[in-house]
Length: 123
Image (cartoon, rainbow, N blue to C red; front, side, top):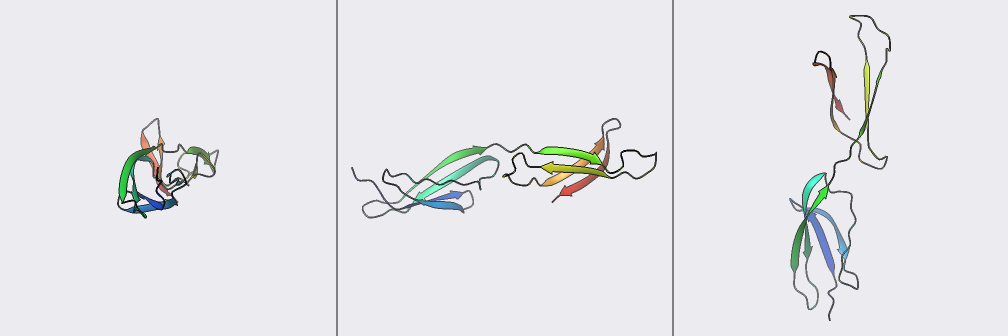
């Protein structure tokens, strides 16, 4: 049995190249990446052929669970009086130190009155 050789390229939707891998002696191309976004994503693979073998494509759906960050809250003024400005500090940290830094918006609100106190963009 002939085993193909050559390269397989892996893509995300929109023709975004994830990377490429050489076929091994068993005809497997192995690519390891952390570049797949959270959620359900279709990954496409393309083999451009090599001596005696034609081109081939394939796809599969990869589900990547979103990481759950931790949220640490603090205040710069633990004691305050009515009407005094209070500074809140919210630190959103990745679930794993090697993970991506969380981005988005943090909203501080008063659960008792259901009032939004402040909103800030994470950076």
